[in-house]
Length: 255
Image 1: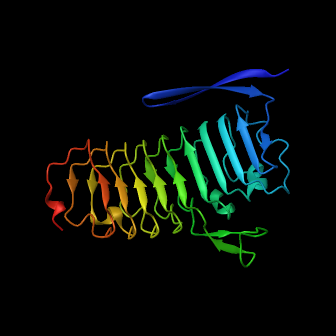
Image 2: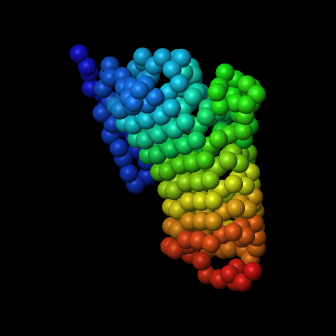
Image 3: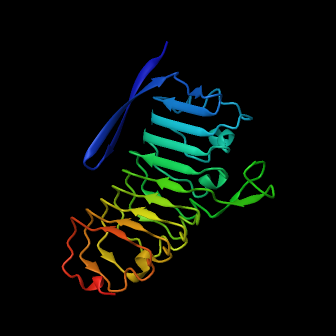
């Protein structure tokens, strides 16, 4: 008999109640390439997952999950796409996503993450026993799309997001205040969404390293000051959203 338990996930301005089914397990779809986990408890997460099957797409929602990088995730290192939403996930592992050499897309939304730790998204990762590696030991990150939307992120540690392969980074609706030097390794980034955070100033170091950035969205922050050289590094920028801030000077427009 399946038992129903309720997990309440809370954050400022919103709440979510997940009805987790005890005994429910993840389902395999699409010729054994996709795993779908919906309303799964921590005890049964990934039960039945075969360690030798190269699963490509992992989708987890409305569930309790173990932190990425624990033993349960070891069989999923071939994943190309991971979607996690409406979970009680609170932490990003310091090197957990360095064990996914094939990962191209990662989306974690409506969860409880507070910090992006140092080394969370490295540029060079372990690729032992992976078909994604050229030399069998290490490879450059293949991550192009990183979406950490509607969490509680307030801190991006130095050297935490280092994947030069990234094209889109979406950190919408968090509590981020300081971005100085946080994106300096993202030379391939084209799209950056920081809407709905707590950013107050834009300095020259805020967008350091973003030499290929084309679109930047900063609406619904608390920006009062933009340095004249804030966009020194973003020569290719052609779209910027700054509505719903507290900007009092436009001197930065004349560069």
